Amino acid sequence: MKTKTVGTRQTASDPVACHRRAVALIRQAQKLNPFPRPRGFVHKARTWEEYETWKKAQKNPRLW
Image 1: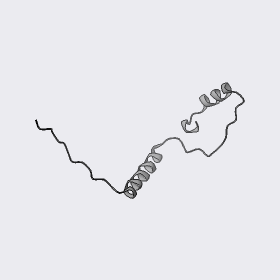
Image 2: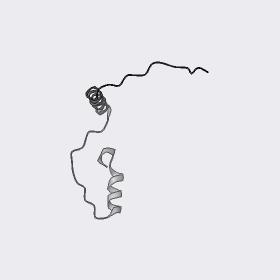
Image 3: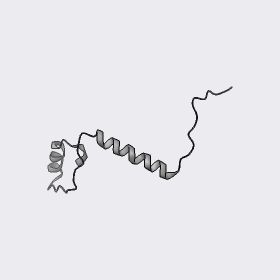
Image 4: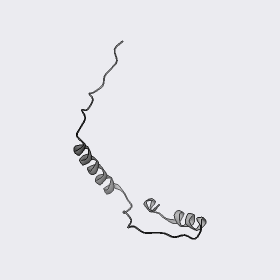
């Protein structure tokens, strides 16, 4: 029995080229993201319930 081959396998790239492609993909994804990247901050809640209430009120999913 023969197996069907579709296309060809890519040869292994060097790590620098892979990193360069990954950085470019991340940059493109950031442009498509509707939420801005938040600045670093600390939210201190007194209880877990208060934290859950705050978390549910946030519209930007990157905050948590």
